[in-house]
Image 1 (cartoon, rainbow, N blue to C red):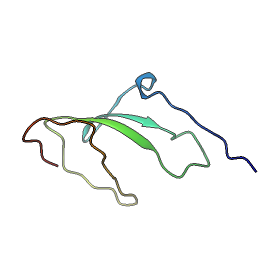
Image 2 (tube, helix red, strand yellow):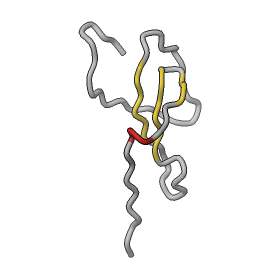
Image 3 (tube, rainbow, N blue to C red):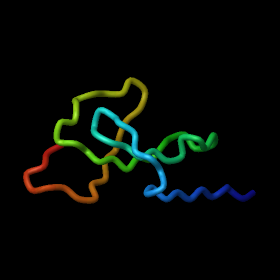
Image 4 (cartoon, helix red, strand yellow):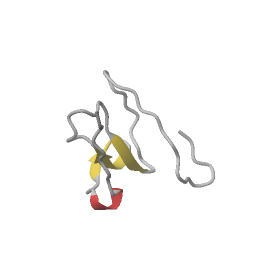
Length: 69
């Protein structure tokens, strides 16, 4: 049994507005994958929000001095 491999280039995924800023969302169209992976540009005016049925985990690639989450 071999699991399928899905490779994504986030630079090729169009950004969409979200409460945090702009998100590029991968794997939403993969039926056997129970999640999506986002690369998100967090804007300075990001809105506080929550999700009723999922959790978010953040891995920071870079941030400005004094940034807070």
